[in-house]
Image (cartoon, one colour):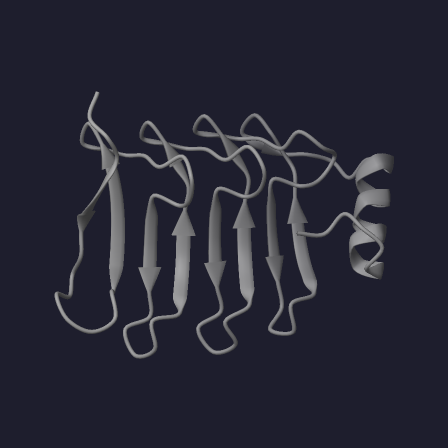
Amino acid sequence: MSAPMLEYRIEEEGPVFSELWLLDDVPHRQDGPACIMHRKQDGAVAFELWYEHGKLHREDGPAALYYDCDTGRVSEVHYFRKGELFRADDGPQTMTFDAQGRLDRALWYEGDDIGLLTWSRWLWLTRARSGTGGGR
């Protein structure tokens, strides 16, 4: 197995537009996102994807993060483990945020279906929206 390496850059000079870390020809990086897309004009991150052996995966946070191009704030997150939507705590696997960074929508998935709002999920949302925990 070869060592992870920075494999692809669109621009040779100036701000990097995108980065892709590969291991054996699949996206992989253990100490950060394997795919990072930067905004060309200022180099700010537009999105980042965490991969392990070609599958979206992150143990300690969301594996897919998307940023609002105007504000630079996180606009959407998705939690994955080994390529599957998964979150160990009672939090949602997918969340979207408004332009001010407030939680806009939270989704729990159960197989191919969006899960029902249970009591523990309602408590999680209440804490997240009040700023007392449960957020990103």
